Length: 151
Image 1 (cartoon, helix red, strand yellow):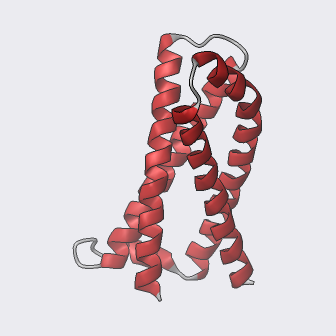
Image 2: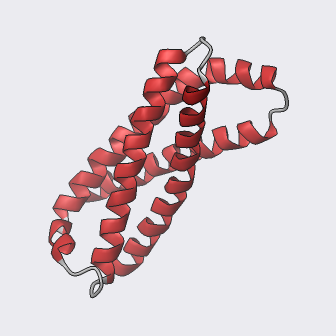
């Protein structure tokens, strides 16, 4: 059972980060605001639901694995003395931050789909999107470090 949960956790991480990488690259390589607007108009809602599903799977499977392996006790360790405690607490902080930023980004996206965004909405939406992308890479690094420590 645990192996299946771990499999889905890794699959969800692949989908989550892969989807973010795809949109990041589209933002770079699609030339012209018209092409970008058309692409995001059609791809945006599908991508949002796709990514929301995988984020829920990630959080659910991660929570199961966290408690199954009794990693909550790791959080009580002094982060200066325990590399595992340090890595786990930082990973959880970044996951919580990504989740918070995703909620903000999705609220703006759902409220303004097919409508013009205000300057503030554009800044917050793009800023949260960029932060999510880069924090994903940081979480991936922490996950690799944790896997190395736990193996």
